[in-house]
Image (tube, rainbow, N blue to C red; front, side):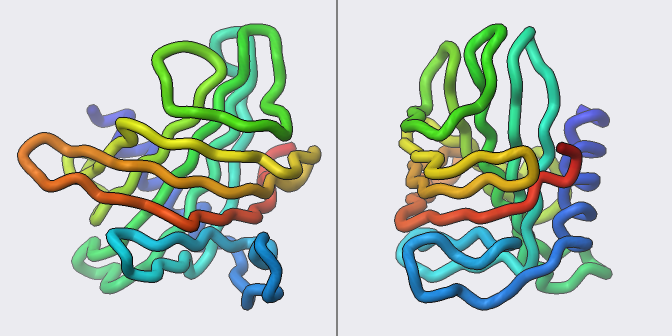
Amino acid sequence: MKIKTLLFVLTGLLVIAGCSSKDKGDNIPAVGTIVADIDGTEWKAQGANALRQSVQGGEQISAAGTVIIDLSTNNLEVLTITFVSDIGGKVDAKDYVVQNGLPYFQVTFGKDVNAANQWFSKSGQATITKVEQNNIQGTFSATLERQGHPDIVVTNGRFNTNIMNP
């Protein structure tokens, strides 16, 4: 649990260090951006970045965006989109679905830095439209669940983030 919390906090700090900019007006937002409708309300990260790592003999790319409401009280929201390749493969530009097995993608949404306060995707789909050494772009939607809480529906998700560790 401590490792999850540490990773969550580190991801948030990386995102805070990222730069945000205004949408270009096309389908994919400007670099450093994750946007989505969360339960019908527009949500836009104040900054977003991605990390690439080797996992299970394949590759994982996680893009995270943060909205800071009040950092002194850990009042923030973090949306993370994670893609995992097949064993021995790379994360490629293609369609992904939430599933048990490889390749897959997952969306998580947290309302603070406590890992217990996160919703996880139970269904969803994403399309990576472009993945390069330093950048990943695409679209996503998902239904997120957390035990004892109503589901969260994420629609019209779009991301364009720099990969910080190519």
